[in-house]
Length: 220
Image 1 (tube, rainbow, N blue to C red):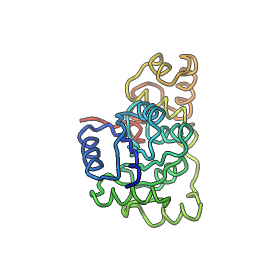
Image 2 (cartoon, rainbow, N blue to C red; image 1 turned 180 degrees about the horizontal axis):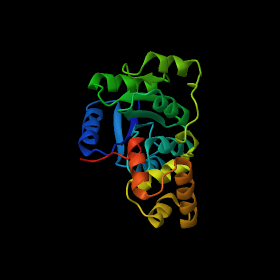
Image 3 (cartoon, rainbow, N blue to C red; image 1 turned 90 degrees about the horizontal axis):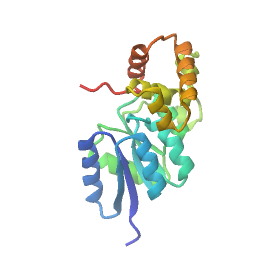
């Protein structure tokens, strides 16, 4: 028997995370090397363990999965990334693969589909859940981007999205600076740019916008 494939799990819902761990533990060819419950910890986990693959939720606290993907690929290019998400729209799929995803699996997938997705990614084949529209798959394989008019959201940079997400989660400027390893002055500049671009004028409006864009999950 060859060496086991080392897999990390990044998912903020504990029940789902434990379910994934149990499923992988039942497979003799896999070994779970660590767990993370937010994007920043996912990046640290990959830095420390260099797994063969990470199951990565796209909607996590502190740092979203798309931003985490970019950092993970910079830290450990050989680590495969299988995105786990509820998002089926084309923009999410294309952005995930642009940031380094090797597969895209919807969270309503069954046990057999998830295992198939993992095996597909390990074999070097990109995986898409059947729930993803055919046009998205065709667009990715042909290397085409969806043509659309530029909106205010399209002008927000990746760093500004990270700051907006943390604002939406209730963090203050100093806390955001510490989490992103930037100065408070830089955070204030990003915040000002975001408000101007989106024509929003207070934290409540920014939070509502972040929730609407899926950057922040509104908890019940």
